[in-house]
Length: 277
Image 1: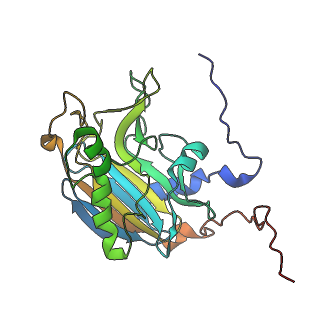
Image 2: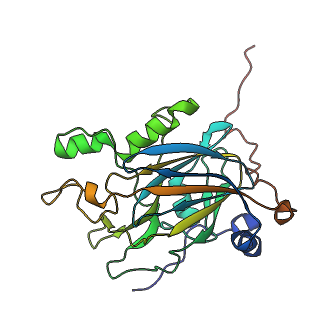
């Protein structure tokens, strides 16, 4: 099968990444712990990360999928745009990939600096890791598919997590599925496989702006058990906690760096406002 070039290619530096800068961040021994906590199974939690800091998601007890949301800490209308990130970066992300925000802001809000699963590649089914193809599980789809109610889907976990920050269900958005292995089958349908993560794996991000983050420990655990269909059962025995660590960096590392700016589009989308006579 022939390979086709990507649709989104820049004639400006907009998609270029200073790999040496992010490599120095990943390898820096001078980081200072700011916050560390563990998310129990089937739960959610939100936290803030100042611009210029890094945060790391870990698997302290073995494979577990996490659903991640990101917002501008000061303006939640700016948030992770999963579909545009798929187009500008990839459907599955790893080191040096950037997570982009929604219109009209459209800028990198986080950059992946370290990924212990970066060499996973493509498995025999076409599965890859850390996906933006799918989205969070939710009680509405579950009700539709099974006729039953369950309050601890990732959508619900994220809703509870951001409530103390004044956000609601309407602010929860399409996620980055951390440690999740997914792909498209021969019928072009989305599939999920058991997470290949091991105890101690991690995915680490550099905060390009002040962030509000929220993470859910998926109730499907490591996704080794079908969640829907004739073979579905409660996968609680394959559910494990996730860890989060936040670090401040040596200011010397950040010399010359500044938060990315939005594209300088100053148009009015072709509209002209006429003044009444």
